[in-house]
Image 1 (cartoon, rainbow, N blue to C red):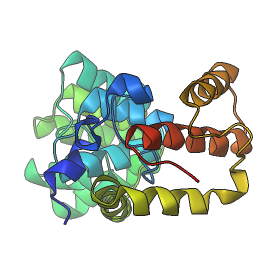
Image 2: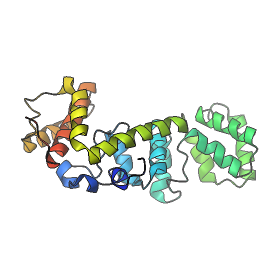
Image 3: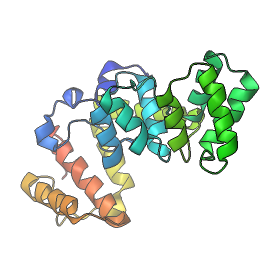
Image 4: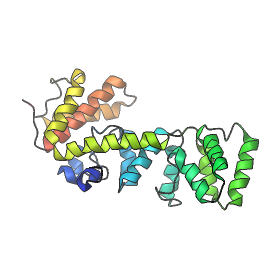
Length: 243
C-alpha cells in the first residue's frame, strides 16, 4: 500500500523503525531508500517534514531539478512565503497553476515549456511578455521570480514513478526489515568489506562514518561504502546482525 502510515513516517522521523535519531545520527529513517537516501534529499526531508504522498512527489521533483529547490523554493518555504504545496516542484505544476488562474491552456503550456527549459534569461523579450500576461492574471511576484530562476525541471510522471518505487521499498524496510537489509547488502556486496564493517562494533562503524563525513568531496566508491556503514549501524539498532 502507498498510504501505510508507518511507512510514510520514515520520511519524517525514525519512530516506525524503533530507533532514536541519535542512534543512527539522522532525524529520518530514509537510509537505503532509492532517491531519498542521499544526504541532500535527507536534508530536504528534515526541512520539509512530508506528511503524505503528494509531499514526497514534490520533494522528488524539487531534488531532480536545477535551481528548483536550492536558491529557490527552499528560501520560499524557510521564510514562510509559500508552503511546500504551493512552490513549483515539477513542470506540470506551472501549467496547471496558470490554467487555474485563467490563462488559456495552450499559452499555459507554452509558458511551462519556456520555464522548464531555462529560457527566461536567454529570451528576455518573450519572458517579459509572459510576465505581463501572468501579472494580468494576478499571479504573485514570488511565483514569477521563482519561474525566472529555474534552469531545468523534472516531469511529474517521473517523480510519481520514483516515489511509488521508493514507498514500496520503504514498506519492506519497516515491516520486513530482515528481507530489506539482506537485499540492500546483496546489491552492495562488491563494496562490502568485513574488516571495517563489523556490525558488532558500533563504535568502529561510527568512527568510519565520521571519517567519510569529514573527508568531503567523496568519490563514487566512498559514497557506496558510506551508505553501507549507515545501513549497518541502523540495522544493528533494529536487532539484526551478520554471522
